[in-house]
Image 1 (cartoon, rainbow, N blue to C red):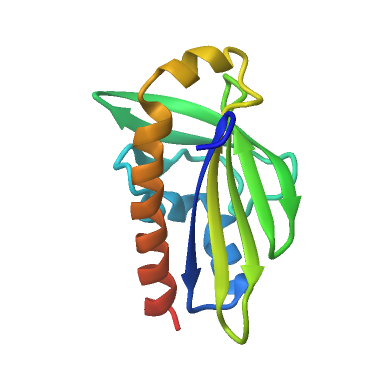
Image 2: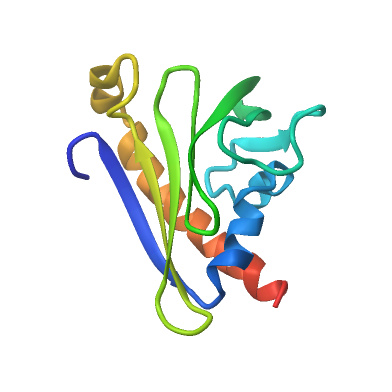
Length: 147
């Protein structure tokens, strides 16, 4: 962990466009989520995410709840990030590394949160690192099944 961010990277044997296609489809987020908390995209949201998109997700961490996200960073085929109500961000950066291989970096960034110190003192950064490793494993499996 550095500062108020934690990141995990993995080389995935797929082109960035194929990976980005999954990341911009909220209905696919439960398939990617390594934490087990993301259950489903809420009805009425966008089918594809772009800068400024607002999308809701059904979640469960102990109790069920709903969360609204807003896409705040977007570079087609390379970068997408969304923030929750507290302001922290989930960021996915894609860097090509040769033919049909991509370095995928997922970042949990709470430097933009309303109460970053509370998140720093919580177990979430460490727990999120382990869950992001699982998410990248799931991502690799999904894109290889679609090849």
